[in-house]
Each structure stands twice: as structure tokens, then as C-alpha cells.
Image 1 (cartoon, one colour):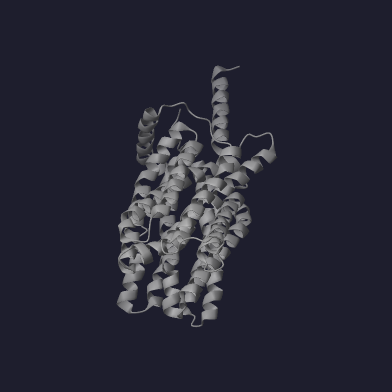
Image 2: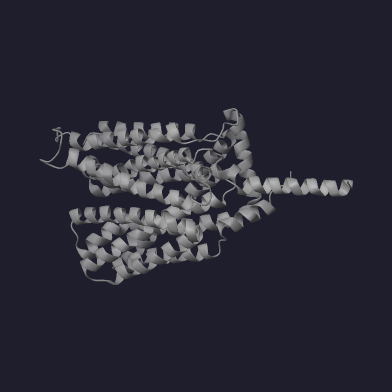
Length: 461
């Protein structure tokens, strides 16, 4: 054979082999049931993790801190916001670095396990936060530490999905995970309220003067997180360890992060996606931050009604994540995100226009149907688009995009409300952010096209 032809054939075969390795992320398992078992166990971690944001950040510990620990609710709200902002900044800055180091080490479960234990310890430590001002700094430290650990754990958890499910069913399993997260948080909250908090109906007789009935819910959340995370470590397969010492992994991880920054053109579509997501996730976070305030101020809803509305919103968000998970696999992540953003804009705009509480409830729950899908499909989008060897790093940047501008939405809503004297005008800023995020997504390529571009622009070896 002509040596030139033989060399060309060898190069073609090598090229085909490289593109096969690059494009094919399906796990090489001989037993489909084992893969399903691993994915179900993976999804249960969403169910487990959600006890922290639901019980601690949103409903019980947040209210307990501002009402019974802080000097007053105004000061407490400011202290709470500052603690979460500092934690968010640490997550944003450290996430990409931690992800890059983890890419060099290979395995993800050790990272998830260590961070899970840290979050569980933080929640369990909240039992010692007594209803007195002397507990302020302990409370703030524990909620900040728990937030950092929980958010960091989700970086590695999210990065596991592509290699577990493969591209064709990734949307389904991402949606299942999100819906299980919403369900797990609500079930944990319901048990906490029924077993410990509610007056005569509580299952245990605990000292209410020292708030033991409230503090016990933090122990419940800690046990919940720990217990339901166990299947992930037992049944979900992990990547193999690279054998690199930690010091070497840190050095190589930082070098890889710098290399990615220098070759940002190769990842330009992922950068555009992260910027678009940064905008619409900021809008989504502002919905949850100000939704209760808007319901109480504009529609004169009581605290109990606001709580019920918040729970109902989470129910519809979980249902939407489950429903759209199948649609994601049919029409793709980008289209699912675009449809969800359109649904959020239309239902959200209607909420700003209606006057009756009944219509507010109706369109509020419709809005909830699109909350879960836009989150689940964002995770799926990056899972499909990110290079296999850089997934932890990319999901670290994903965490960064969720935190870097989290102050913008609340800032805009607060100032527009103040200047106009109208909550409706203030909340309209959220719709503008959803619209800008949708416009940004319009200019992002589909994940399959992104991966092809990345392959074409891979450094030659």
C-alpha cells in the first residue's frame, strides 16, 4: 500500500476514534437495570439536598432567626441577607476552581460526601442556636457554612448526570431529579411542621420557651439529608480516580482553568449560555424573594396564605419539571428553556395586570409550571454541551453564573418600587430580565452543535 494512503487512513481512523470518544458519553454498562438503579439513587440526592434550602433557607430557620434571635426583624433580615450574600460570593468565586481541581482527580463522590457531611453538621449545629441575641453569630456562621457546602456539593452532583444517563435521556433524568427535589423539600417541611411546630397536633412534647420544637426541625433536616444521600454513594457509579496527588491536581486544575480562559473562543457558546442563564436565573430567584412580599402587599394576603401559596408554587414547579423532562428529550434543552421563559413572561405579566386574588392564584400556579423546567433544562443543556474532561469545571462556572449577579434583580425591584410607589411597576423588572435572558438564549447554539464546534477547535494531539 502507498505509505501516503496508509498514513491518511491512519489519521482518518484516529480522527474518527477521537470524535467517538468526544461525542459518546453513554455509560458502558452491561446491565440496564443497574444503570436505572444508579440514576434513581442519583435522583434521590436531589430529594435529600432540598431539606437545606426548604427548611433552613426559606421557611423555618430563616423565620426563626429574624423573629426570635435577631434584635428585630429589620436588622435580622439585613444580617440574614448579608450572610447569604457572602456565602454566595464564596460559591461563585470558588466553584470554578474547585471544579477544575476535581476534574484532575477524577472521582466525584469523595467531594460530594465531604461536602454533604459538612452541610449536615451545620444543620445539626443549629440545634444549639437558642432564641437569644447571643446566638446571632453562631446562626449566621452555620447558615453560611451550610449554604457553601450545599452549593458546592451540587456542582459535582450535577456533573455526574451526563455520564450516567447519556444524552438521549438526560432531560428526563434531570427533570426527575428536580421534581424529586421539590417533593423532598416539601415532604420534609410537612413532617417538620406536623411533628414539631404545630401547636397541639405536634407529635413530641418539647420545651417551647427555649424553642426546642423549632430547633428539632433542624435536626430532622440534617438526618433527612444524610439518610437519603446514602443511595448515591452505594449504587451510583463514579468516575475512576486519576491517581494524582492533591497538590498536583490543584496545580494542574488551575493551569487547566487558565488554559480554558485563554481558549475561551472554543467555549464561546457555553459562555453565552452562562451569561443568558445568569440573567434569567437572577429573575427566577427574585420571583421567590419578592413573591411573598408582592402577594401580601398587593393582594393583602395573610402570612398563612403566603405560606400556602409558596408551598403550592413549589408543587407546580415540581410537576412542571417532571412533565417537561420528557419534552426536553424530544425537542432539546434550548427549545425547552425558550418555551419555559415564554411561559414565565406571559404568566408573570398577567399576574402584574390582574386585580383579583383568584386570578393571582391561578396565574401564579401556572407560572410555577415553568419554574422547574427552566432550571432542569439548564442543567441538561450544560451537561450535553460541556466537554467530558471539563465537566466539573464547567458546572463550577454554572454555579458562578447562578450567584455572580444575584443582587441585580432585588436591587432593580426595590428601587423601581420605591421610585414609582407601585409594587406592580417594581416587579415588572423581573419580566424584563426574563426577556433579556430569552434573547441571550436565542443566540446560543444547540448543545450538539456546540460539541461539534468544540471538537473542531480541540488542540491537536
